[in-house]
Amino acid sequence: MSSVDNNPDPAATSQPSPVPAGPLSVRAIQQFIRDRYYATDSLRGTPATFMWFIEEVGELSTALANNGVGKTPTPEERANLDEEFADVLAWLCTLANINGVDLEKALEKYTVRGVEGVKA
Image (tube, rainbow, N blue to C red; front, side, top):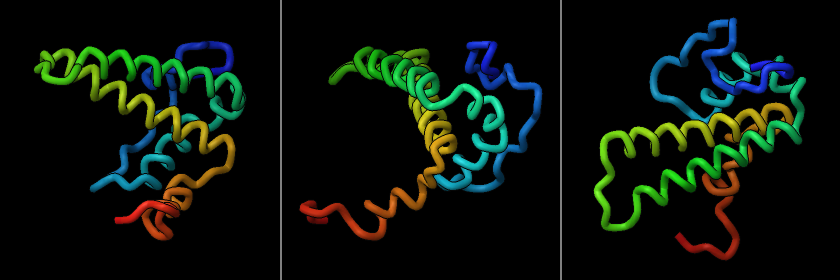
């Protein structure tokens, strides 16, 4: 990924990054994305990164529609659905990183404080 090369494919990066060991936390995933992509992500900036994020949300929408209610997805459709969820999460982490947001801390809204008006 570079600001010149518009290909967001993780394989396009030249710097290997170690995969976090053990169960993944939100913080570990966000840090992995930061370690691997921050240099180019920060150069791309928020507006262009948001566009990539929205494109992935659109691809997830299509994958969800292809796995409609009462339909048994093919193995290929299931793999695509998994991939699109991963892509959306990775791009969300990227947006959080370049905007200085700690997603795990932000999620305390749900995990610690609870959402106002919502009963468990």
